[in-house]
Length: 153
Image 1 (cartoon, helix red, strand yellow):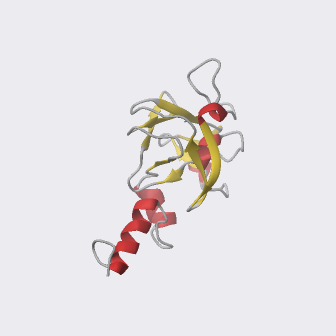
Image 2 (cartoon, one colour):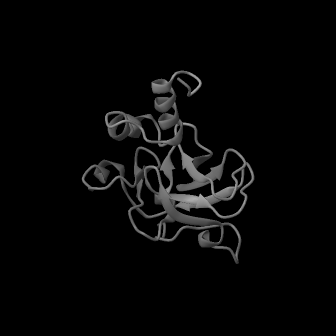
Image 3 (cartoon, rainbow, N blue to C red):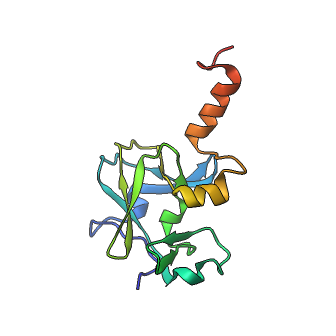
């Protein structure tokens, strides 16, 4: 069973050494404190494993479906990865292997950059499409759509 803490690869390292929780355009988010190279493991999405069939009975949006049988309930506050927001043009990705969800950098991430990954089409359709996606890429697209293609009038 997964613990409620987020895991990082180095023995003497913790998520608080390389990441911070802060305000973003969509609420709280995770930001890099140090450069993170492309391909590097960032953090593990952790929490209690529950049966996927029971996941809809929980009233939270921090569920991460591992497979058709198991889902991680990541609502616990020790799971810093729960603060990673959706991005339509993300800089990180979630990789599922051996029942673990590990977040890796898809691009070089600079200090101060918000870490985002794509939550997947089912989540997007259920929770984000109707109110409108608030990720940086979508906000920029809507802003440019109003002001003309190049952002000028």
